[in-house]
Figure (spheres, rainbow, N blue to C red):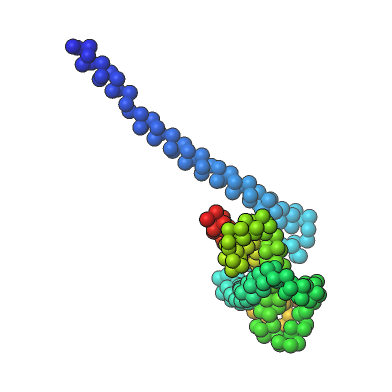
Length: 288
């Protein structure tokens, strides 16, 4: 009887398995954090190297520090512009014009691109006109916009609208025309009408290509606006860069350039995140 009673207690001792299973969670979390840190470090190596070269080269006399001051001096000038409120004023003016032009381009170019890509007669009618204007640089039309709309906000927003419309329009057309014909035939065989076919197949399949155009337009909205602000503007990052160059305030000039690059990077990352969200929606709809 003693053997029978003691045997279950000997077998019950190894039941402390949950502690052993829960223990590896901490190393797993640490490994994920280390992996994230390694990826961030890997992606920032080139930026850190560029910053180091920018700081060291003027101090060693490899370049004239009058025309290319060390990065630390540029950052000090950037901070002074930020403290004085000038940088916020110029950034606000540029973002207002850029986002207004980009938003109008999205609202007009995407529906037009969907129509041109979906209806062949409309595409054949407008193709010659599109070929003429798509090869005309936006900055080449800057004097035309200024003459017609003046030096105010309207001409700058209109120029950004024109520059941003083309990548969105052309990528939207390409996205609609590039839908797999097998998907279209399969949807039609299931009895979908033209409206449901467009809603359930064409539009979801074209979303990634459309967002490629929107991302390109986001970059164009900053670049074209900066060039436009150098002509007849009293505020904006382009005006800041141009004014600093004329007054030989070289650190301020580079501060404006760095700010333009940072804004372009942030806008691109926001559009990438938005694209991922809509791409997930596209997969869910097509799967359903």
